[in-house]
Length: 411
Image (cartoon, rainbow, N blue to C red; front, top):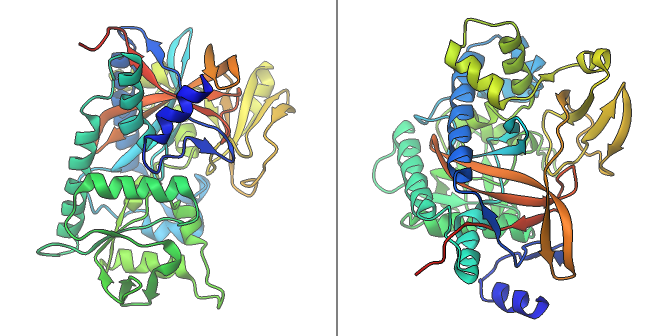
């Protein structure tokens, strides 16, 4: 098993099948039920429709409302920009399959990872195991979506001809770097290059330049969260992030994912949606309330509703990743939590706790049970590739990538 796995993943160039020196990508293929793929994509499309409508409301809300939703004050003046005809280029919902159907636990609309795994590697594993890839053709669609987004971004900034497009990430992080190189390859954009974040040059009021001094028209910073970018300051105290966003707002450089994606990123948006649903707000139609009831979990900006009922719930920061700073609580007391608390300074939301389903997975050390979380992508407003993470009850950066396939051998 271990030798087969090693041989298989070594044949995939520059793929991070191991992370932190540990097995990450499993040599295994979860068999899906016939209607499971359709259910996941329908849920993705429906939930996105709620977020899209909510974004239109939040964008026109007072600054105080944006601050209440946990957005940093430094971001507020940039959150109303709409350079594209869609809110996000690449977003990913996380779903849990429960006895009541699929439930959405969060939306990473700004900087979702898990892209190459689902759009490329999942299909390779399916071929290896003789399964049908549920994400077939989605890689082609993603490439088209990237080109489409760059075109619209260039149009919004009044550019003609071929824009100078740069993909960027932290060079030392293999997952971030190779994700961006993969997206750049898929995009097939003429002249596009990869430039590490630390080699970008920002000239206040002028533009963003690469290491050779060429002015960048569009910067794809998919793995660098906007809340981190806004706080970025150089050694000489030059406010890199703020100056970059000023250039974006004055259309001296285009940015993807756009700022509208960040507007959906705060988990407090889930609490706002749920609160409006509980109060039968007329902003949502009857069918939209049905979608919220079906797929959303009760989520609040304080824990009192759960304490009053004695229910188990999850505390999580409005901005955070990989399970960091997440706690499972009951009656105000913490039952279990992650060791890392990097995002403690952010506003918290409190969400109804649901058990992640358990499945037996095959690791290089043998069979073991793991909790399953579904990641499902929305690409330019269309439900796209999906797949599974397998690990602890709180999904963290040590969780496995579990490929999945449909029944039926490939001829």
